[in-house]
Length: 115
Length: 113
Image (cartoon, rainbow over all chains, first blue to last red; front, side):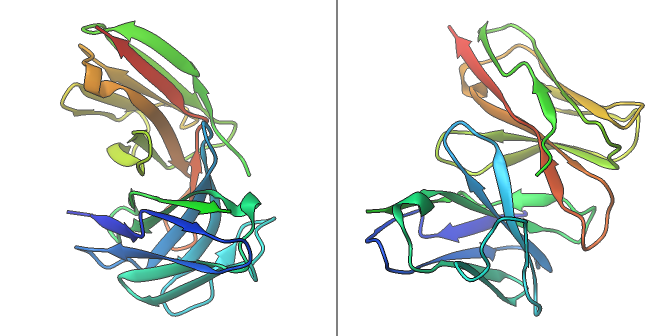
């Protein structure tokens, strides 16, 4: 149980275009999902917290207009990187929290490369 | 944002050896979680701890929630090559819809034959 999927697993896009990443909880309902960014050999940095049916809460320093988050249902959250630039290239990982003991389960990640 | 201190940062060990790593915080947590991340993958939850002093095992892995609630330890017994990866601790200050995890800096484990 507690499986989280992400799509796509990797994407290459041109500078200036937008990219959407999907995060799904496959076997449980997640009222809260999280989006993280991870640079090589570093820990996970929380970008935003997404609650179903409400606006996402962004961490300090994360541009909400650049990283659009939508949590339309209890099993789906999306992250859209708008007008991507090479510095947005990174590994993006989502996680979903169960209602039981508030454990977080992570998706497999999406490698974004902006050329 | 805040990060938890993990040590060691990295370690090379031989197959069959036991491994210990720990995580410390300047603030109290109500929940400690340990994750393992393989290259190019998302973290996988290994063990969750909910009470100070709690000792929990998952196969060859054993983790403890420190009495002070400011630290946690992870031990791996009889390491095998597939134990290679990065181990992250994560703490949660309280349980509630607004709570979020604070991650450790990670311990990179490499196992030699």
